[in-house]
Amino acid sequence: MSTPWLPLTQPEQLTDLQQASHEQPVLIFKHSTTCSISAAAKSKIERQWADSGLTMPIYYLDLLRFRPLSAQIAEQFGIRHESPQLLLIKDGECRYDASHMGIRLSDVKSMAN
Image (tube, rainbow, N blue to C red; front, side, top):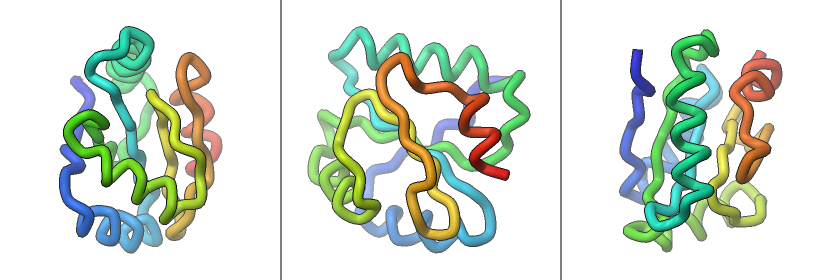
């Protein structure tokens, strides 16, 4: 099973996913399409997804095309911008964030419960 990436392209989506996170946790992956570390982190998520047992929505943000949206995420959830970065949004708040090679779906799974 491939990673069910959902494109994150509109500011309104942030409000929607923040509200949805009260029902089910949501992931946001911030990705720089020109960065090899970011590409490696994305591949790692894609390889681990099927075995992770995670069923939550996972949004994909192309940082180069949607830079203002990345700034809005940092402001809205009170986290420092990094790239690549994986965020777990639960109950309207960022409960986990990791960047670069520190991104692990096993950590997400333990935080999501």
